[in-house]
Image 1: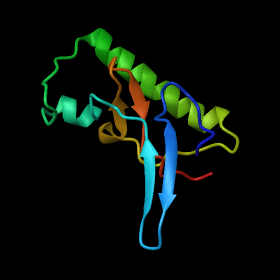
Image 2 (image 1 turned 180 degrees about the vertical axis):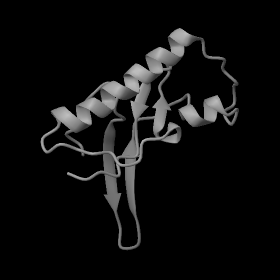
Image 3 (image 1 turned 90 degrees about the vertical axis):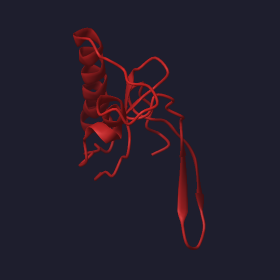
Image 4 (image 1 turned 135 degrees about the vertical axis):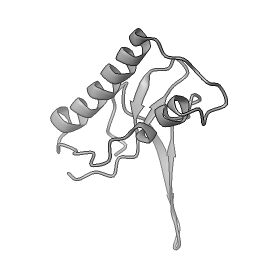
Length: 102
């Protein structure tokens, strides 16, 4: 997973394994999930105009396309939903929670 590098996929920075748990350390996404923003669960309620919605949808699609077509082996995400689309500081979409099948 550390080899996955795309501007629309959350970057894995490290991991830690222990006998009773495993930790994955990902890039911080300061604007939270698309789900939280759309449903008012985030700190700030943001109103999205159509251009912003289009840009987020396109970013998510580019991330998913990269995983499905450009990664070797190909990665099928299996759990695409608004809570797994995170938003960076510029409100760009990043695909997360790669519960994947190679």
